[in-house]
Amino acid sequence: MRRYFFDQREGDEMIPDEQGIDLVSLVAMQHEATLALAHLAKDEVRRCTVDAPARRLATNVRDEDGPVLRATFTFEIRRFQ
Image (cartoon, rainbow, N blue to C red):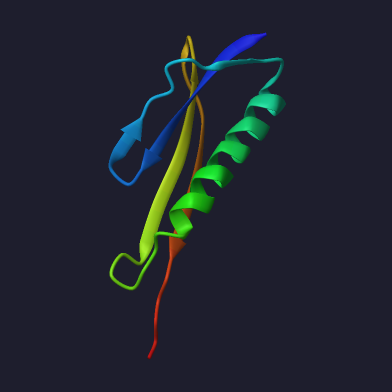
């Protein structure tokens, strides 16, 4: 098993994962990163308004050797009228 850390990025703000979790494979890590990003996106999408129409979110995954994966999500609202 390998310990992975899932750092969250909301715009320019980075929220580091200090604990990490042990996972058995890269597939399990990618699945966990996807779930973490979806959870973050669910909360952030509710905050989008015409005055703050876009959000860029990311989950950066690292292990003891360094970066492993980055998953990103961009949500944007555009009004044409």
